[in-house]
Structures are given as C-alpha cells and as structure tokens.
Length: 88
Image (cartoon, rainbow, N blue to C red; front, side, top):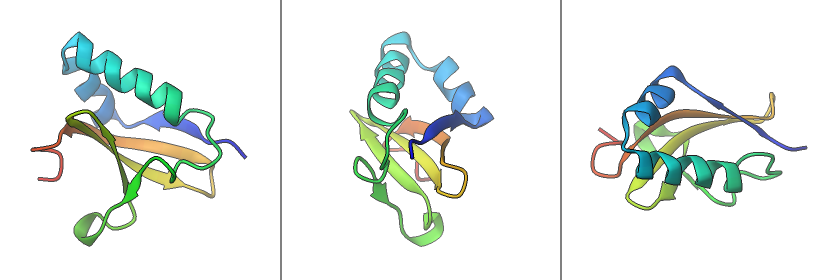
C-alpha cells in the first residue's frame, strides 16, 4: 500500500514564508521520497521524548516533522523548520 502526503496548516504556512530555493528543495524532496512510497520510515527517524510517535526527515539544514498514520495510509506533515528551531 502506498502512502499519501498531507500538510497541516502550519506546514503550509511555513513553506509559503520560506525563500523560494528552500521551499523548492523541501517540496522536491517530499515528492521524490515520500509521495507514493510504500514505507516512509526508511527515510526518516523516529523521535523520542515529548515528540514520541512522530518522525523527522532531514533535508539539508531543514527538518520535516511528520505523523505517519498507518491506519489511513497517510503521512501528515506537521511542521517544517530550520534544524536549530524545529524542536523548540
């Protein structure tokens, strides 16, 4: 079964506010690595602590926080941000 990708309002607003090169980098990475994938966990890493249950993906200096919803076959992109600020 292949996963679909959905974006939260926060993630969409973040992408819109980013400079065009960073936005394009992230969108291209998501299209290439997450859209229609059969196992999104291969490219990511499970988070621990307060963010347990979520996954993150490294794209250059940016991080994508996602909730992999196996029962719906959906990857929900929760937030996107610079690695120094995303986990705060």
